[in-house]
Image (cartoon, rainbow, N blue to C red; front, side):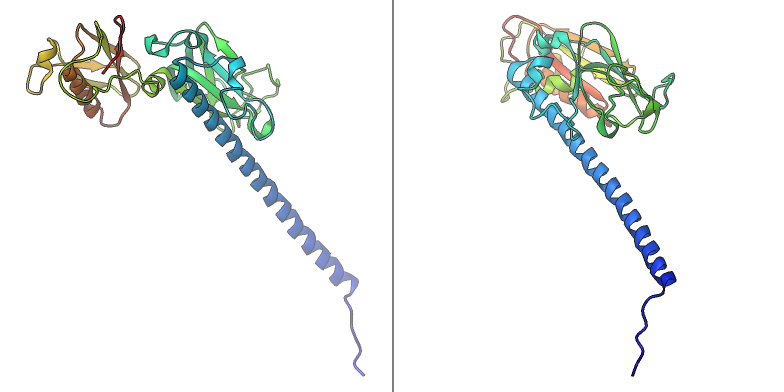
Length: 290
């Protein structure tokens, strides 16, 4: 008759230890995965909010106010059920954005808490949407309508900072999800940029218009026509001009011409890395670009 042998206490303890280690590793992985899912969900909510605000602008020509936001976007809460922050230029909620040339908001991207040497400085920002993400702490800015010069600091992930005490005054690794849209980005989406219509020469009811080229990146050189509408055809005289980073060049004409749309395309083609904005804006009475 064979004698049955069970586990010794030492063997049982080893099994329990191994199971405990495996359960601990699994719990840690599950925690990381949950955090990642929450982050992606909050990021998608922020992106959807930005698209909702842009849709409102397309419909009305203006930004929604903070009180109008809840009826404009799908949700005003992130994946942790914490309210999104919405920072916007108040003037863009009362005036058609096509008539605006600047805003009061500047965004600085900061590599450290002091932000003494920002990696980017972006002016003329129309609005910013923020989620405090996993630490429940909005470290960037609060919901506000801006009517004077305002700087929004966005930090690189992990920088220990808290630049907004209105939520929690708790410096910790930065994890906010932040997305902003500049006025130059917003105006074409709202139909402010002339596209030339269906061809032919002229059209529209502009008594005058402005062609603005805003350099958001490195210095560029552009060919800008100095004469009348008829001189804008290919082969006619142009002159060279330099445009420094962050500056804007403005050209004014008295007639709305199809040739000027060709000029717009020429300028865009010269911008090989797409870091400049070419914006045609009407400034006359009953102005409707074609």
